[in-house]
Image 1: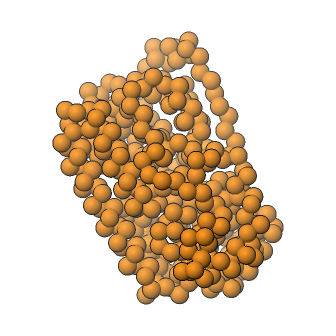
Image 2: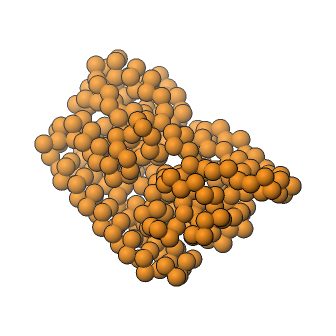
Image 3: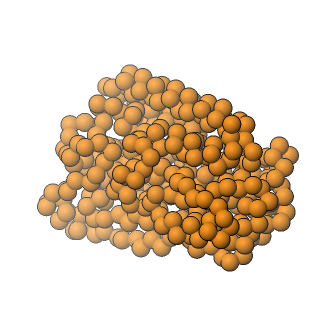
Length: 338
């Protein structure tokens, strides 16, 4: 990812503020700008953060997302208008390490409540299968074989400029970790807006309950399968794979724009044959060209496994839970679950 960081002068910010702020599309249809709603105004970095803010905040919170629906969040560059909007918000909810321009803007902002989701759960290194082997190699024998044969080929996946020095940021794809983040966000809202703390506490509990139910659906839905291995274009599903004893083999690394090497493509062809892989997964916000090329070369089919980084009219659902359940259906089919 190539992020061009824009340094906004105080004069520019003043000019933007004087002209008024345009509306950024949030998860809700509310068109009021942050700072002018009479509500607890939260600026969220991208959809999974905005979803948490809306579910936990309910009627008391106005949520604005910095990432437009359909925009690849890894590529977001903060505009002057968005930087000014941060100045007016009551809280910012973001995931440090995913969007460097957001990290920089929030770090420089005087906003009182800054909630970094990465600090509310544990992050791990993914994008290579080494970590999976160490933890699951004995339980899932196919994974150890992959590392012994292919470990060196994964090295390029962590060398493409992504700011993931704190670990893999895709924590929302593990319902258990996402629930941990939800609990932390709920506590932060309660502290920042104590007049509505009881409602935030209630809404957080309801959301955590729903996430635990989703976790159980994945556990039971993937319990009986013919293979543990799935192939994706983007190494976004490391936490999900780890949670349910699967092995993710990514064409690219943590950065969806990284082009795979010829050696990596040949490696994946071999893995597909050896492990009974039936499907190459692609996602809705990036090109499916590489996935379809690999699938065509290996006689596999393609399907969508959505990293839920944004909801568009191409998404298989209208919110996080619906898309995650669609992901479960796709995984069950690809892994031969019964």
